[in-house]
Image (tube, rainbow, N blue to C red):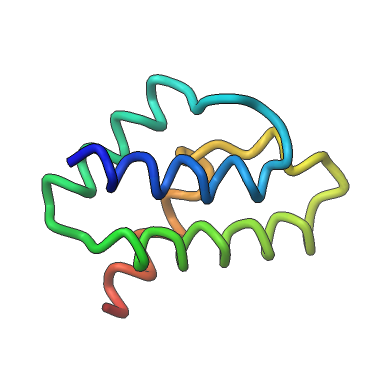
Length: 81
């Protein structure tokens, strides 16, 4: 479902504050979560948690964050339900 991908893509890009699209790897991860039936809001909560942690621990720009980096936070959120 395209809405799922677009919802997550827009959320990530709004937090990154840069870029027009995600990487092919990021789109693959989104597709995997959709295939597993993970709700988009759960993915977005994990993404937000990851961004907060990244900003707390790293002086780098948030534009460098990928979903591959955030995957651990997203998987933790999925486990929490």
